[in-house]
Length: 150
Image (cartoon, rainbow, N blue to C red; front, top):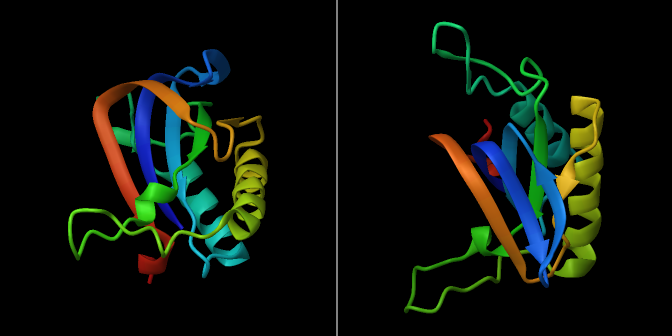
């Protein structure tokens, strides 16, 4: 699993002109899934995200986690995170998992994140043409790939 995590003051997802999800202060998580991903990736990535100390403490130092600030998350599926651009100018998405694999893993990831946060997590609509609006706070953007955790 590959995630691009952005600290946001607010974020929302719109599909066909309808806002389907929004959050205030927290994290926007763009999530890419590949065939080799599984339960261990889900659990590790969820724990890592809720415990990342990327929110400022009273001294202005990034020392607080999503749990510490009682923030929330918005998770948006994004198969393009597994694009390969080695050859030519058209990205290849061959490493991205097909929907029959990625949809259940995406749903399990959202459920795990909700358990770890102990609150509802916002989501986009898997496979939809989504418009994501965000106010990146910092800006702070972190990229995590579960295949690089060791």
